[in-house]
Length: 338
Image (cartoon, rainbow, N blue to C red):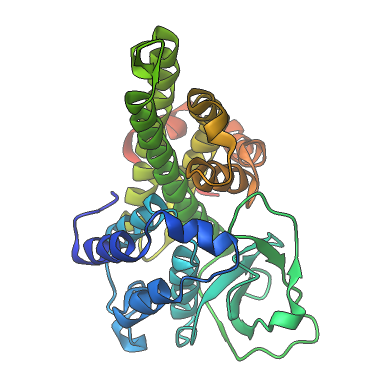
């Protein structure tokens, strides 16, 4: 599940409410990093929440971690909160100390979210079965185009000395499950936030003497978007629950994570089109809040492989499974072995 009421999630939500007002994402895009927000997250130990007590963390349950990530997206937070949480968790799985500052992850050649901002990069080498920590000097960051306001870079470890490196028992499949689950939670949260913004807008704005929400066409568009939002939240919740159930071996949650990524990625166009349409021209202005959610959704849809990529991988596995195996996976969560 996605626990938004536990101590970790509630602490995160309060920090984002207090220190990430609607002006913060706009200021961040203009180059003003929200240092006060980041310092509050550090001082409250939230960046170590997904780290074991042996490594200085407090080993929070995954459902609370997902609740905290949910809160960060609701606030359109422009800091690498989820990325640092996940990077530190990856280091912890190899018995390594957490990053000394902000961090992101490099995996399977994918673009690195927040790569232009973070101080360190955690690299997972699936072939070698190793986790390594690298510095990310500002003058060596290779930026790539990104729809997300968070930006992205590429990272090439060739010729670079790792600050720390160790073997891990986690497989590439396990890390795929973790990363896809985090992204699914982020995407579902962004869809819900944009939906709420759209509902508020059509309730407040009037046309021809009555609120936009009274027009049948508007109602229909938002009804479709609300259905997609509910489906996205359910898919993310299923993936989060599977990840929590299989905390010692996230690879067992791979199918739920992939299904969530596919489902929510399919929802992105179905929701972002009506969100922008019901906002009219305002939905496309830089000063308004909507794009902080929709641009991230468009970027996250393609990050780590879009819905077609993961559908092919999932379909290839299910094609060689028996009907009984598929039914057992759907009804019990015990999927076929890879």
